[in-house]
Amino acid sequence: MKIRETTGVLGRILANRDELSYAKTRNRMLVAAKIADAMRGCGMNQKQLAKKMGKTESEVSEWLSGDRNFTLDTLTEIEHTLSVSLVDTESSRYAYSKKVNKMTTIIPMIFVQTTAYAEESVTMGGYSKYKKNGTCEY
Amino acid sequence: MNFEIEEIKELSGDAASIYSVTIEGEEKTLLEQFFEENAEYETELNEIADKLSVMGQETGCRWDYFKHNEGSSGDGVAVLKAGRLRLYCLYVDTTIVCFGSGGYKGPEIRAYQEDAELNKKVEQVKAIAKRINKAIVEKDIEIKDGKLNINYWDYED
Image (cartoon, rainbow over all chains, first blue to last red; front, side):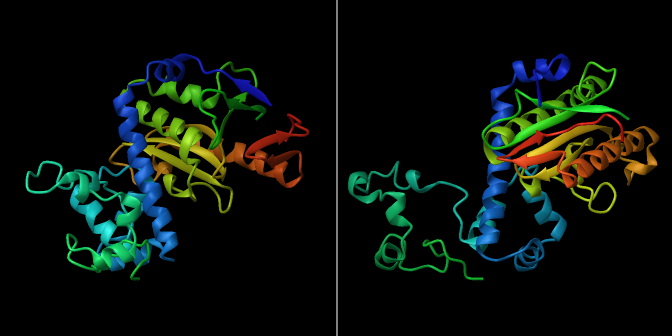
């Protein structure tokens, strides 16, 4: 099998990659992959997810294509539906609060994502329907 | 149509092997030609290059990233989109994709068949896919460890 080193326009684009643009495309594709994996984990197909979220099937298809520039609200809706974490905000909790002792309040993510913690947690208001243990309600 | 399959060094990685083909008598692969012919769509080309890199290095060529069934039934011809730019390929699996060519699909066009130039490119990819699929079935090409291994390649169809 011949191995080709690219030349011309393609070669120039790859050699002069814009790292910020690349990071944007990469993140869109990784988020799409995470949603697709979460769907499969829940045994859902595109049609079922669309129905559950009140979206069209073509919209869900676009989410999974890696082309979608999601709004935070849409990501949050998907997180709730599939019980998957797409936006990491845990490290920001209480980060600017003077009322809370950050050393004792900020909980490692691995601990937050257990049912046991969710049930006992005062700060989270007890066990929520948005399950943190990686299971789906579907 | 005679051609050779070539692996694209800068795009292939741990997650997927990215291939294209060079038509007999030509210097550049169809993928390189696609970038030359569509140089005016700089933003879209950058996005396609980024997508190919991410697939090769990290995510693999996940099914959902492509629009499938663009060719004849079951021939594996799929398309990768960036804006209105279309890049057609033979989708083998998540680790192997062989890219052909494509072009700009204008907003007035619903199906590629309505654009003579785009239709020509897709027909070319379909012919390449047919030849490669036949070689895979006849074990002239083997799929192993995320690579295409050529055991025997005859130029003649």
